[in-house]
Length: 116
Length: 137
Image (tube, rainbow over all chains, first blue to last red; front, side, top):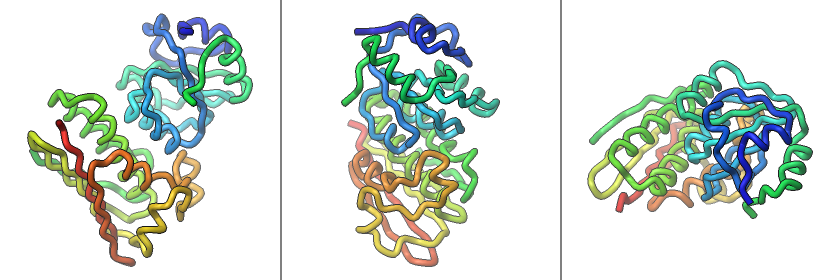
């Protein structure tokens, strides 16, 4: 099952921080973690990264892992430095106010699959 | 091709800059994206380690048609027991490092998984040298 990012945005009542032109992209999988070393162990890159860790290293981790889509949950905000780097790497970055559990739960309920 | 980059210990806003530059170079050289990912994940973890643990460091990169060799040499506390440091879950990282999303004792095992060859030399009180080799074919 694939879901357009635009649909995920509706489900999560999320805000688009950057990458507006890519909202037609489809996702089938998601991975949730605040530990970037965990994210760096993944060998899949076509996924949505759900995290509450909002700092520059989150964007760097996505860059190194070839992950294109990130959603910051728990109302965490993207700062200017993060935005510049995300833009440079053509990432889609979203923010939502829901907890990580609720974010994961809603996406799972709508058919998004875990990696393992 | 030969490149060098300086790393500042403790400066997390710059951590990953060198790895990012090397990724751009490898992309320009049309290296297989799967190989690029292995190299840059190993390198990024190693770069974060230098920022997290050392006072300063230098990255030396040599690329030829066959392989990429990266040496990260730092001035820092060194690693007293490399075998222990290689164990998943063992970490001496500070709270600040953990706040950055690292410091769970996964860095060195992650580097090992993504490197074709990994050599670590360390002297306590002097520094550590991490050598990562990946083959491009």
